[in-house]
Length: 198
Image 1: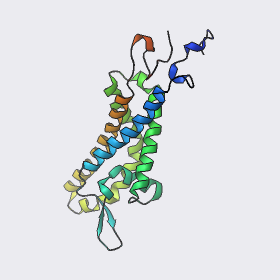
Image 2: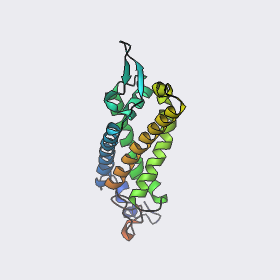
Image 3: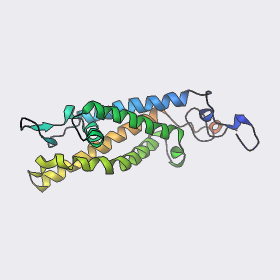
Image 4: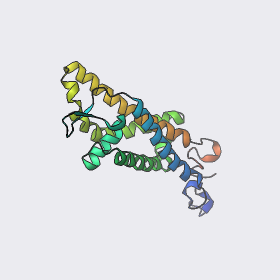
């Protein structure tokens, strides 16, 4: 409610029950963004990434070639081959983060259009998650290390690039699904309504 006591000063997205659009876009952005991330993760090659020896002594590749779910499964369960749990954790985590993007104030302080806001949001997510997840992949680079320092550096760079691009793919998708309405009637922000109505 505004200082004048008028309830219509509330933005639609903050008025319970009045605007379902931002809520639906927040959920959709998280789900579709997760699918886009997984698609990019799946097609990105990991030629030197090995989880270690299995029960038969053979080297284990990433399940389905998915890096981010393997990192999450390793973080949550200590078992990087539990791909389903990694995917579930990824979808829940990114959908929750997308609520922060849609309903939070982050976009108000990022200049440029929606794509730049999506990239900036992805950069923030990558910084927050990368420090926790990427070190868990260090033991998986043993095969690359056996090929010398140059090969190890290339493998580590490809690993970091894959992680970053996957997060950026999610951020761009979320930004396109939940665009910022910067028209004069929206108060300069918001998906489905500005912060303050005129």
